[in-house]
Amino acid sequence: MHDSVIDITEIREHFDRKEEIREELLDISHRSIRKSSRAMTALHRGDEEEVANLLEEIKKDVKKLNELLESEPRFSDHGALIAANREYAEVVLTKTLIEDGDLPGVGDLQVSPQAYVQALAEAIGELRRHFLNLLRKDEVDESREIHEKMERIFETLEQLDYPDSILSGIKHRRDVARKTLEKTREDMTRAIRERGLEEALGETQSRLEE
Image 1 (cartoon, rainbow, N blue to C red):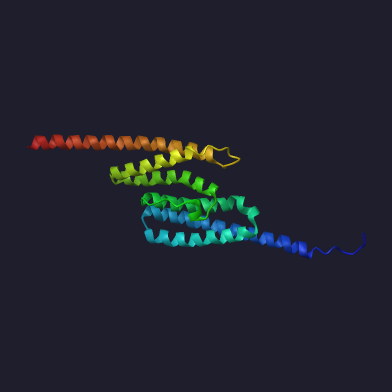
Image 2 (image 1 turned 30 degrees about the vertical axis):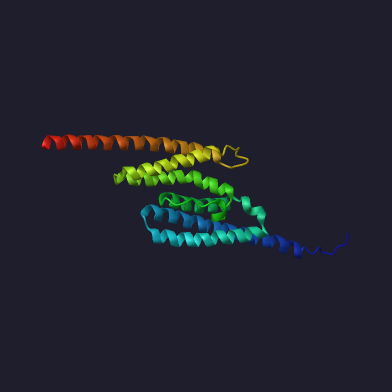
C-alpha cells in the first residue's frame, strides 16, 4: 500500500447527507409533537380556529417528513418520527370522534399503520377527558355517546392481537385502554343512576305540589 492518503471525500459527503436528513427529521418531528400537544389542548378548550390552524401546520410537517423518508426510508422506524405521526393522528382521530365524523384512514393521514393504531388506542384516554367534561356540565346523553365510541374503539383494538415485535406497544396500550374504560363505565353508571334519582324526586315533588 502506498503512503498516499486515501481520499474519503465522497464517502464523507454520503454520510454527511444521511446525518443532515436525520437531524432534519428529528427537528421536524419534535416541532410537530409540540404542535400536536397544543392542538389537543385547544381541542378540549373548544378553540376550533386554533385547532384548525395547528393541524394545517402539522399536516405540512408530516408531508415534509414523508418526503425526507423517500430518500432515507431506513429512518421510518425512528422513535421520534413514529411519535410525531402518532400525536398528529391522535388529535385528528379524537377531533373526528368528538365531532361524530367519519374516521380518516392511514392513507388519508399519511402516517404509518403502527402510528395510527397507537393513536387510536391513546384517543380513548382523550375521549375520557372529553367525557368527564360533558359529565361536569350534566350532559349525560352526550357522555353516553362518547362512552359508546370508546367501547367500539376498544373492540377494534382487541382484534389487533399481535406481538410487540410486530405492533410495538399494543398490549400495554390495550391494558391502559381497558382500565380507562372500566373507570368510564363506572362513571357512566353512576351518572345515569343519579339522573334517574333526580327525575324520580322531581316527579314526586310535582305530585306533592298538585
